[in-house]
Length: 191
Image (tube, rainbow, N blue to C red):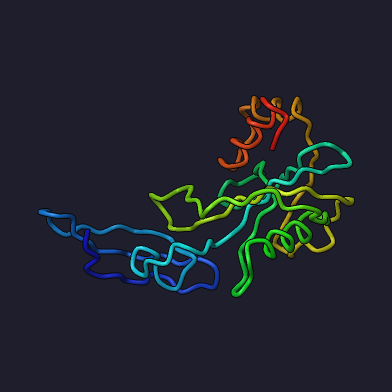
């Protein structure tokens, strides 16, 4: 595939829309619309190594439960069941971002890092946004004191049985990655 042209259709702080004109071998030029958190889409820059955001699957050791969030999401017109998450700031490591975001969105503190995925892509037909899924242990009591004015987040603690009930509830809207982790937690009791 060869990128022929990229037109930036919006210019906002957190997300932009691009029209990419490209050619596949032995085919006529085509165009694709995509959203990116980058100044130029990753398909142009080739910079796939640094994720845009982190999602934190946190196990609260004292409660022996998984930390889940219920967060209002404008595109869904309601609440999404997910995990604490947020953008990685410039110059920030994934570990630092996970520690900061867990604290800001839940009031909880990371006590141990268990695992971090490579950059993952959840909707490659629409965006080049990448996330790293970070698994941690945490402690503390939930607080919403550090939430941004645009955030409405409720912190839940779920056991494997409660995770199974959440996953079985077809009326809920889930983050795809969170549903996968929750269903595994329900089946195995492990994060």
